[in-house]
Length: 316
Image 1 (cartoon, rainbow, N blue to C red):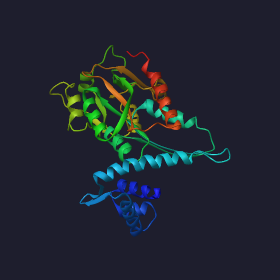
Image 2: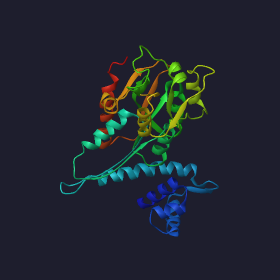
Image 3: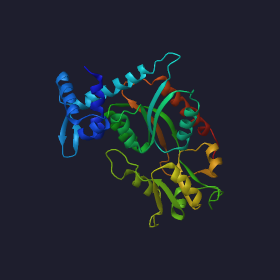
Image 4: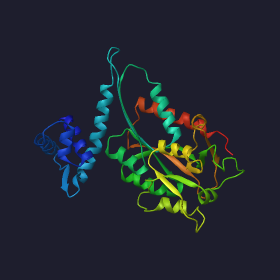
């Protein structure tokens, strides 16, 4: 069995197109189709079927692809075993929520790498559903998902359905993050109802909960005063959010605790904010049975270390 064919199958699953996969793999489409047919004959299963939405895996194909991705990761790890005169090839794909402490941990992890060495790292900031998809289908080593604990059962069921394991990274209360110039930055106490009624709120525009449409909006709307116009700006990356907070000083966002070093760098403050059901979790996710490699554990340990900088801080 040719493991190169595993790579071909994974690329087809990712693109949902044999034509696009062939282009990405720099090979002729007939040759790719022939390779997949040979693989299917060897396995005795049909891996893909054609639909109006493109080429998608069959049930048996999905099971095969799960194993194929793990085998390809292990091959990468074996190839990383090197002699002193051979450069290290470090490949890592992680998918995470848009959070200051995660970004800081990742930056410190990369900065601590020994050079010279080959390095290919994908750091994808996105929503929880997409992170699950990246780990399940797109060959990411591991991910981090974020959810309100009121929605935990839906995510637990969804992870089980996708054959993913999980481990708690952090349970926390969201804080109100704003410019030091914000009119409410020095108020004695803050609550979400007051802030959302009087100031512009920044939020992520693509948050969602498996199986339950509108769950995120319902959670926040239940904490807003009735009959008050909604003033929200939805963004899709953390950098834009920071720029907005600094440029529009009457804006705020709810976020996990941010490391003090980042708040000082950007002139931000973070305050406790009364919010019903204010309990959130960040959770590591990875393929069921996957044992984190040494390089993956280095990053996970850095995540815990940077988390601790904020987890034990005092907030007013």
